[in-house]
Amino acid sequence: MPISGQCFTSSHESNRTKINQIIILGAGISGLSAAWKFSENNYKVEIIEAHSDIGGLAGTFKQGPYRLDYGPHSFHTENKEILGAVLGLFDHQLKPRPRVSKFYYNGKLLDYPITAQNVLLNMGLRSGFMAVMSYLNGKFVNGRRFIYKKELTVEEWAKSNYGEYLYKTFFKPYTEQFWKIPCHELSIQSIPAHTRLSFSRTLRALFLNKVLSLKGSVVDRELLPTYYPETGYGEISGRIYKHIKENVNLHLNSHVVSVSQCANGRMRVLYQCLGEIRSAEGDYVVSTMPITNLISTITPSPPQAILDASHHLGFRALIILGMITRKQNVLKCQYLYMLHRPYNRIYEMNMFSPKTSPEQENIVAVEIPCKVDSQIWQSSKEEIFNMCIGSLKKDGILSFEEVTDTMLLKAPHAYPIYYKNYDRYLSTIKDYLKGFKSLAILGRSGEYLYMDIDKCMARAFNLVDTFCAHKQSFSEIT
Image (cartoon, rainbow, N blue to C red; front, top):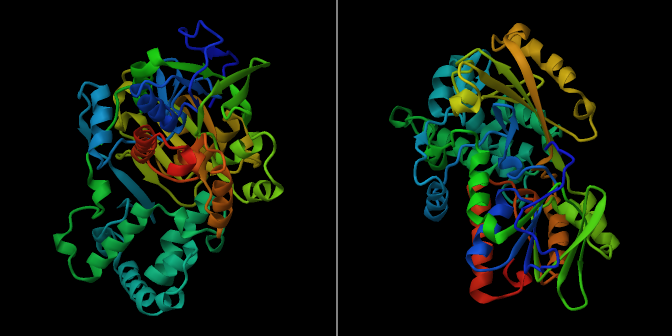
């Protein structure tokens, strides 16, 4: 996220010597959710956030009257507690909105996640026939080769379930375009469980001749009502903070330098703000910062084996280029997934809420996953725009003349990378962290666990509820 260069601490922190019981590293949705629960249980909470605003990947970037999400996300959940908590922040004024995603395939728009109708009707007769044969071959021939393997790669899983044709048509090109890593080097965890379930249920229904009874995607989670705040998804984070700010000290633009355990068992965090090193002490620390960053800040330095394990984990960065335009109804859907383009996904902010930009204006954004050390990560806004506009014009989406201004966001830790056998290194690190009885990790980057916003909130609520109920050390409940 952009950093303004100003250090901000919430105004009610007049007593600099006050010691808080809970220190939370990161003001993303996981950190804010944990702070919410801790404050409800009468704990004093201090949040240290590296960036100039709250929300993390669930935040919304503001540029004048324009609002651009890091995503964006639609809120949906089957968890009644989480649903009630979020809707309650808006006095239940949030209303369900349709969630429409498409996959651009050979000049045709397919439902995403893919549905049986798409495979049978939209892919064409030859492609449909090849998909059927591929699926049967995968299930009854290739599948036997990997039946006893505990940890499959994306390639092994796709071929064993769907065969060579569907693997090469869908899984391989999109997965490798996104991750920039060959499928045989990626764990199956790289594909979210609900996406795997989507393909599995859809194709199983297709080949059991139930196509005519299907309506849209058969994934229960994808059919849940979705909610989106009027001025951007980050409004959820903003309302959480507004709800708890009287009981929370928030430090923005504050970069963690070290995390250590004092002789008396309390935890100390040193952080830098405007060149000044400051200290915070508390009984417990909850870290939502990237787990690899946490390891590098622990003092004294962890054993070499832990540092080596950390080097085997990594994150896929994400660049988001927002293009302001007067053109409306550009995509005819909220998200559009694409292959063989400089970007992997396009989204249209007015399809989420027209109040994310002034009247008669719109924001169309492209997402570009990349490596932090790549050339494109170092590229300017103008260079990235010039790289993308040719494909956008060719596909009839936007032309150079239709874009009046641009916005650029960069997120270095957007997605944990599930390399093959990543779990052995992650387990080594987590076992080490359990040695700190007053330290817990939480969130997508904190736990190295890809999950949706509602899952992040649920895990934060559960962590705090369990802790408060039993007064156990974090190492006993995580």
